[in-house]
Length: 187
Image (cartoon, rainbow, N blue to C red; front, top):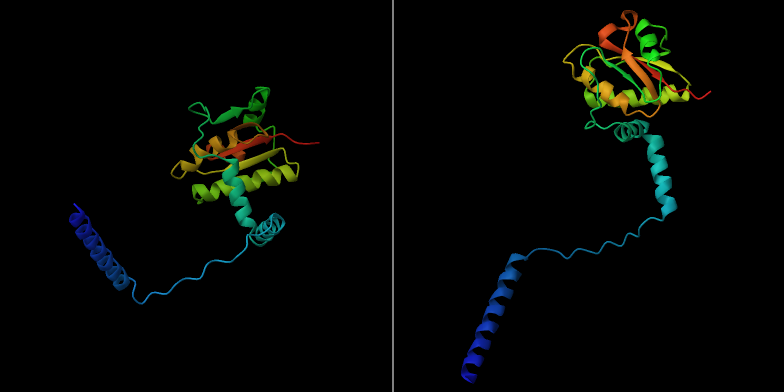
């Protein structure tokens, strides 16, 4: 039995020597890398860096706001036919007023020719501008085209927390190629 163990040890030693030789051949010509010695930034410096990046690239801020604002997965309930929506707690008379053109939009957004991603960014920027400028009524012209924007814009609008109502625009504001929107206003 002891003879078996000693021959087994010799086989293991030969295998280890062969493995070592194979490994050395495989890594021949390589260099050892130095360890990374960069210290992590303190929290204050991270905040300053993000603020500097936001100032340097404000369009990235809008893009991030748009993706935080609107989900492409959300599908609100919108009846077939005329595009219209009224927020919970609002009077249905608002829809009639929007349809008749009683509200004139103070801001217009033309989405003709934009991709869905670009349209989402523009819509978020317009809603933010309406909020900052205390604008209550705006008009979004999505056009006819392929119908992707016409279908998606109402689902994005429903997600906006300050939305009171929207309706297919009257003819003077674009008809079925536009939506007139009524927003809450801080007075």
